[in-house]
Length: 132
Image (tube, rainbow, N blue to C red; front, side, top):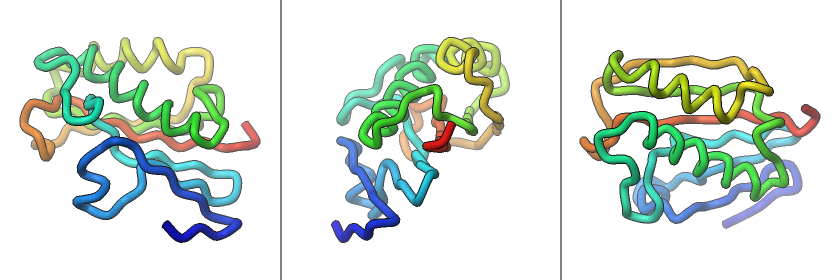
């Protein structure tokens, strides 16, 4: 993939990256953006039916993308959580707190009608700042 000094991209093992033509993470200057990350490792869904386990896996996957840029949870300044059911808010909040309680990023929770795989209950995005 073409790289410029100001923008760097990393891929993961997600099959959707190739299908849709996107990168898991993009670094632009001091910002690193991690796109929508679901609770898959390769093609295996983790935590089927369990929003807490799905959120933990999705956050772990997103943080793994940040690690490719030399960053971790302490650099996260914004999170976005997409859920298919309002009943799952407490479970996803618990997972979010475990990862980010000490960091306290700006956070958004949105309820959506569904994802590309109907078994998915949670998808997350992260934004990090290298100067954090």
